Image (cartoon, rainbow, N blue to C red):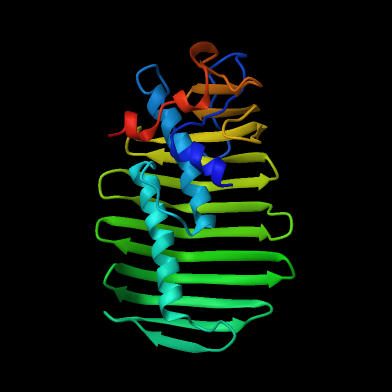
Length: 286
């Protein structure tokens, strides 16, 4: 898991279908405006798709803040770090109903059972580092854990992360993880939106799909795993993913020697010797 995030945060990984014709478009959600992918914005589109993965996976990590992340990914790291700080500082007992006042106003209420889970509600809780508001629901079933986030918003100065709705399922025995997210994160300059975004990690296999938008590309793209990413080490050794735009698409394929082939509308766009060389948000969306 940490290796996967290291790659994603380094701007290292995008993965797509080998060349077999361009002109792709999404018909799964007509409520989003898809960007037209061209040579001029292809790097930014790739970087935005990569950034979405690291941003989504951060919901699981409650994290270690990394200086190598993109600014939007950093905001998500800071969000989860702050949530952890709050829960550690206040230590609400989920096995009993308890309301704790926050130092700058607002409160945290916990209600539940230590065996089956419970609910933690942040009521405009203000602390020196920021404000948190919204609900987190934890359900425990043996080794299976499900966390739901409802209208959860965390703001630290100019950094905001908001989950309109999101859920995470984790099995502590197998370490399998699945996520669904609709929401956004912003550092005050760059913003990333995720819509109906799902991701799953099973062993060394990683897959995801959903809609992604950054202010860097100005509209949505749809990302789809067409072949699960296989990642036993730092770089993927196989996997295919498509990014679909308005009458356009990017496809990337990861090879067994860790090289990466990128195609734009069915034509070769670029080749990379390793996943490290793929474009990042830091490079394309400063």
